[in-house]
Structures are given as C-alpha cells and as structure tokens.
Image 1 (tube, rainbow, N blue to C red):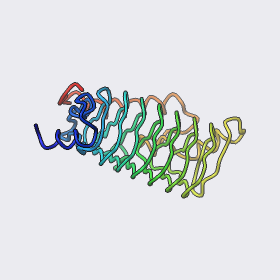
Image 2 (cartoon, one colour; image 1 turned 45 degrees about the vertical axis):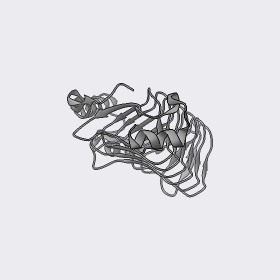
Image 3 (cartoon, rainbow, N blue to C red; image 1 turned 90 degrees about the horizontal axis):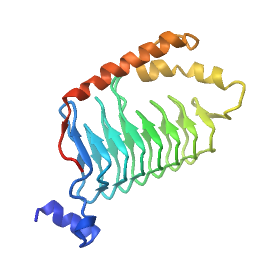
Image 4 (cartoon, one colour; image 1 turned 30 degrees about the vertical axis):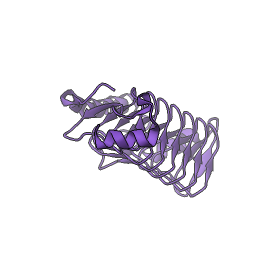
Length: 230
C-alpha cells in the first residue's frame, strides 16, 4: 500500500470506499496538473484542471469544477467547496488566480472567478464573486448575492441575500435599484474580465468580442490530458 494511501486510510477511516485515492477527475492543462494533499477529499465527480492545489483536510464535493486556465487555484486547509461550485482562474487580463484561504466555505452552485477569498469566509449557495474582487476575513456573501469585479469586501462584512456589492469602499444595491445598471456599467467588467473596451451600450460588439476572447482561451483545452476518470 502506498504511503499516501496509508495516510488517507488513517485520516478517513478503514472503509476503502472512503479513501480519496482517485482525487476526482484530474486533467493536465498547459503543462500543469492538479496537486491534492493526501488528507484532502475530492469527490469522484469533481473536476480539477491545470494548476490546482488542494490543501490539507480540504473537501471538494460532487460536481465541483476547479479550472485554473492559464493561472492557478489554491484551496487552503479545511476549506470546503460544495456541490456544483465553479472556481476558475484566468490569464487573459494579467494573472487572475483564485486564492481560497483556510476554513473557507463555498456553497453549492457558487461561482468564484479570478478572486481572492480570505480565511473563514462564507460564500453561500448560488453566490458569485467576480474577477479581482477581494473578500476580507470572516465576511459573508449570502445566498444569491453578487460581488462584482474589483470590489473589496471588508473583514466580517455581510453581503445580504440577492444584493450586488460594488466598489471600494463597498456599497450595496438591491436588484431593483434604478441606479444598478449605471453602477455596473462603471465597473468596467468587460475590461477587467476579458480585456474588451467596447462601450456598455454597444451590446452586439461587446459580447461578440467577449465570446472571441473565451473561444481563444478555452481552445487550449484541445491539448488537455485526462490523468484519470475519477
């Protein structure tokens, strides 16, 4: 029995079905392959792509996708990534890793894109955190909330359910706020996430160019190598 398998058996119990032997579906991308600490658990249907590092006692649950693209993803000690969460880095506009610190909880169907999450943060079900945002230690992004690009959420700050957090210092807007569209337009999301300068009102050109950026970026997956099948 390998040292890693023995260690996993000791941490997770004697039942062989509980041993994190396969560590999910692991894919080598752009020359990098996922690294999983032997005390972590990655569910068989979770997918790790590229430079993904899962730390001690972390848990990555069923259906979660951690895709580093040309950047990296780091999951800290005892962090939990729940079912069907999407965690994705990017290098389209500089280096945009996803850095998840220790004891972070990421709920089911949550999305983290190119952002930094400090320790003991709670990201609830279906919440979204966009590129270059930073969540301070002990902060909460409640159910269905959105933390927009470049937003800085202070330590222990609470983003209420189904609200939008923007800017630094952070401010909160409700979905029906008449100023929401203008506020989102000022964020410059297309530039932050895709390097596209098309005007907020030029929707056809804007989304055509955004799509082309992702077509080029995701095209690199044609050379991926599946290391195992979970």
